[in-house]
Length: 88
Image (cartoon, rainbow, N blue to C red; front, side):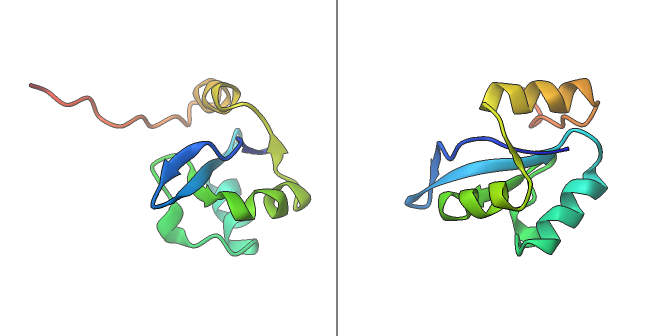
């Protein structure tokens, strides 16, 4: 299933959502490509999607979930790839 969280991450003068799959990376890559999300939006385990694309992603079938729910779904599926912890 394709999941999307609310646009709440500020960056580059915009708010961003995260688009992910709880099934496979192939599923989210195919969905993103089919709906015009550029590959440069891929960030380890999700796509960053600008707020102005949120409604279109939901209309295309992405399921709206809370940010925490999206992370939990990625973890449960074994698809979560967090940023490496920096070593001081």
